[in-house]
Length: 320
Image 1 (cartoon, rainbow, N blue to C red):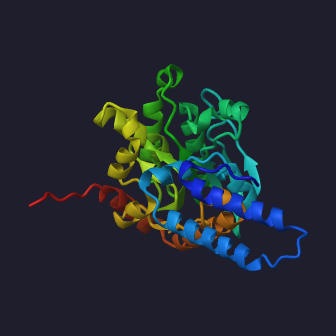
Image 2 (cartoon, rainbow, N blue to C red):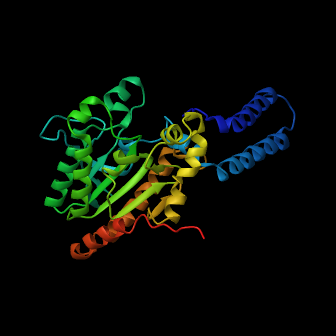
Image 3 (cartoon, helix red, strand yellow):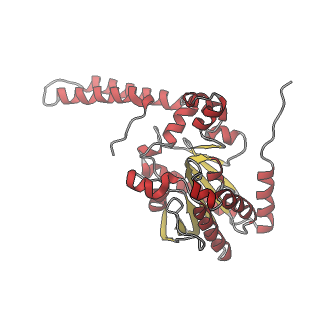
């Protein structure tokens, strides 16, 4: 797969082009080119490690938004089996931005709810760029209640810039739909694991994010507002998005240190979009491990622990 490079990856691209040109130029010539090829290859590897080991918050946001990054349905294809999609919220309609249904991961039968973006313009319009409508959240709740009824754990895959803020969504009470999900997920009598696989934008992400275990991919982000939105409010200029991203502390490791997520799932060098199979293996291993741990916890212990976990967020200290 040809990967579209991001701006900060261009030095790597230039070195890789230089290496390809050298190999092409020396092809068929009786010249020992191995030392030079090895030197450039080693330089490429060193450059990659330097760049990806020192990514700032805005660069991680760019990786989280990469159009070739695996989306929810990719994980369902690579990590789950026997997926049966369920449609409709039984009130208004179906929402393609929020697919969900029943599936099996490893040896665990579960319910899956997810945000889904599109790969091209046509699919993005159908999926509404991963921004769900009220009927998407109500469909997710219907599937979660079904899981509760049959004693199945829930796996939520979060990847959205935020819930859809359009007139139709407001008319159909998007805020109420998300609020109901927050309340009902807190009370849902079945284990829940949520994974932020890309963008975790605001209430749109939290609407399926109340879980016993919250995991994040290494280059995903989870934030109350997008960097562009924060920059527009604080600096009155979206150009300050990089500074806003740093101030928001939206990265996986920062959130893990703050105790807001339970585990950071490591990605292949350069991001999940560079190796779908590798990240799928890491994803499956982490989700299965957490599912197997929490399904053994009695509900009379699990639900109070879930409540205490979320009530414990938001601690702060004052300077001096």
